[in-house]
Length: 435
Image (cartoon, rainbow, N blue to C red; front, side, top):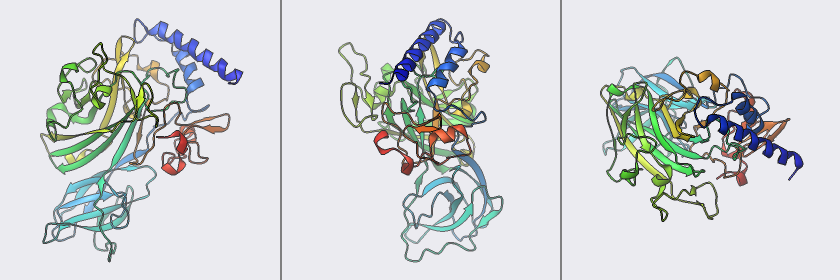
């Protein structure tokens, strides 16, 4: 190891000790200057775009005139379902023939066009798709007067859009043991499915845990008042993350699925302990074994591969708002103990939400730093970094990490939010550094 690398590690360890000593009594008595120094040493880049949103997707609304006989539903799709097996449903709404409607959809920022489908049924009840293309953020009304011809093509029914949520569980400070910012302390996948105007279905997959820290998780429904939520249930009684109900309540004390946030918005509780959600296995003293799951391809002491766990939730509203819910409204967040206080990590545009716990005590300005401890990635085939690998950085003109492909790297995106917005695609990953 180079002397400079050893010196950097020593400096980081010393600074981390200083932070711990100043935060042990009060969560807001921490040394911002010391914390910022560690971030500059460990974070991705020499330069971070000061106006970065850390967002890779947008929500849009499209006007659709369904001039198709027997139409029952409109879907906005990522691909043509007759020519691609990777088409995803970006937004959906029930429709009536010749009655204009608006459909909200979520789409990656790199997308230039989408496909709009009018769904009907044949005499056997089989769904048929009539498809047209449209530019993203189109302000004109889309209709089906000139549909795409699909002679002899076979329909591949689209799946709901999949979005990854990847977290670093060290906020409000950098993790001195994760110098590359791997965003794999907890990895979730979320799919949103439109049921009808009164309900959506959320499919949530616990994909990986890269830490031994106990982590809880929930989804805040931004813009949905608690009073507008009728109920949340799992699709089946056995379909649950909660393997041991009696062990719940250490971080998120409320044991119900449906919780009212401090801001009055509805919250879906996922689990209080990610490790127990994967499997219930305890040590001799009765505590949960805190192995790392799915961040390494080798099984060793403390790390193993395990089948991801998926739970589906029916989210039912008191009024017809289901078609208005996009991924902009979904705020999956994690919570854990930092010193003696409970902290939350949200995606960047909701970074300062205090959904379940009072965190900042009116001192949010101390945490304005332009850094994000969570990533929202709209790509069903995303490969997050393996344990010990950073997601990417750009220092002294050199690219590093799992996504370092020149012109399409995480580091370049971090330095300029308008560049390399496609960095997360598989073809740009360092295959030996990602799961």
